[in-house]
Image (cartoon, rainbow, N blue to C red; front, side):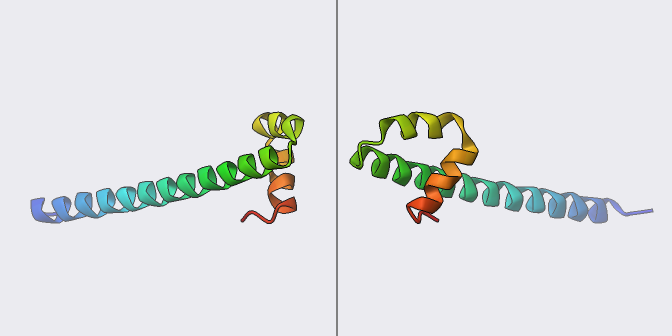
Length: 72
């Protein structure tokens, strides 16, 4: 049977792992938002408003545009 201190350490490790996963998810979300922002700017600059509207609702089309513009 685990001691109280062992249980506490285990809980702390689990919390640390969850916090790490949340931080990684947040980082990815920020990166994705910046990519979408850059795509929006490019499409506006090129006056591709219909493509911009479609990209908002169609993730496959948006990914194609990101590749077209070389936005990683």
